Length: 82
Image (cartoon, rainbow, N blue to C red; front, side, top):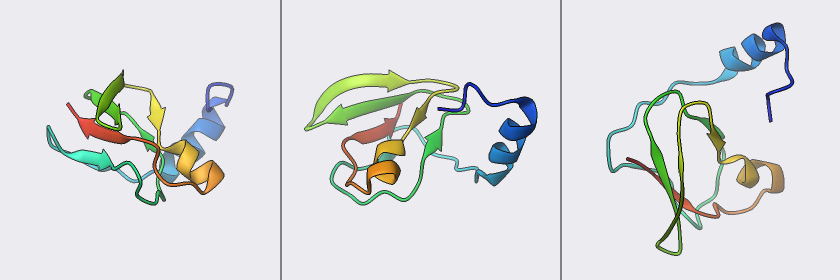
């Protein structure tokens, strides 16, 4: 989503983000809930589950949560800090 931005644009967007610290096992998003945030993984690893089934992991530099913002939809999956 942001890969084609220059350094200046990336810096502006980065400054708009709020840091959130989470603990292992903590849910970041919960399937079916409303979503109002997009998340960029700064460190750690996060696991994605839909209907209780593991789908994938997210690692540093990856983004999740954007679909709820773009489409105004409920969260499609639960993301837990690993």
